[in-house]
Length: 92
Image (cartoon, rainbow, N blue to C red; front, side, top):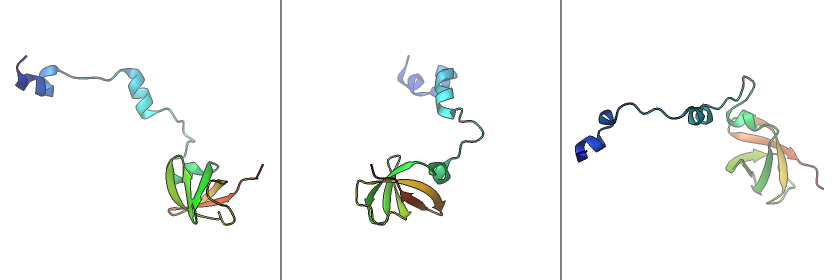
C-alpha cells in the first residue's frame, strides 16, 4: 500500500469499534444516575487543606470541613455552584 493510501482513512473503509467498546463508552448508567457535581452527593472526600477537598481524584472548593485536618475524611452533603458542602464523617 503506498504511503498516501495508508494515511487516508477513506482508503481503509469504515471502522466500527466492537460493541463492548461502545457499551463502555456510553455506559448504561440508568435514568436515575446524576452526573457532574450533583452526582458526588454522598461520596467520601478527603480534606487536603483549608477549603479544599479531593473527590474521585479531583480537587474541589469546599465548605463545612472546618475542624478537619489534611487527610481526614468528610462526606459530600450538597453542592452550591462550584463549591461542595461537606459534613464530618464519623471518626473511628
